[in-house]
Amino acid sequence: MGAQNGKDLLVKVDMNGTRQFETIAGLRATRVSFNAESVDITSLESQGGWRELLSGAGVKSASISGSGVFKDAGTDERARQLFFDGETPDFQVIIPDFGIVEGPFQVTGIDYAGSHNGEATYEVSLASAGALAFTAI
Image 1 (cartoon, rainbow, N blue to C red):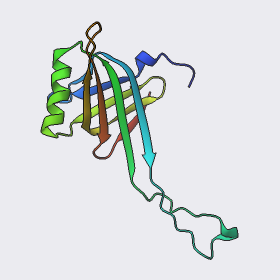
Image 2: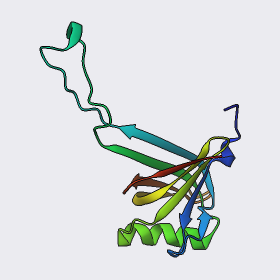
Image 3: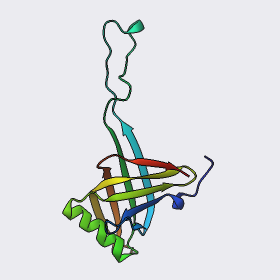
Image 4: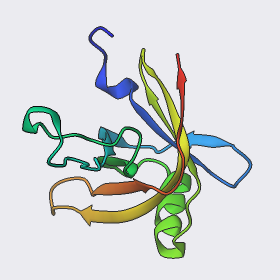
């Protein structure tokens, strides 16, 4: 994967449960993180005293964070309502020249900020809430 334009990394939300995905508008910066916990199975018999990990075990998770400005009342409203209702709809994350990650996420945080001589901004944090699918592009 060569160099990519950061604005091409998109976060989309299912707007109404019908798989109608819309880009969360106004995001200026986005970050996607994938994590997998390890399960240590090291014992006295471990070769050379090296740590051993159980293959395929442990909890996998993903998180998404983004920050930006208000641009679209529909996606702003959807993100806010998801937080207050605690819903876990499907999201899509388009990673340019890599693939699409799709699955349920929960909005775990929304921060709003602004200064008297600048634009109002927001930050949103999402945590995976189930199995994710990856499709290469």
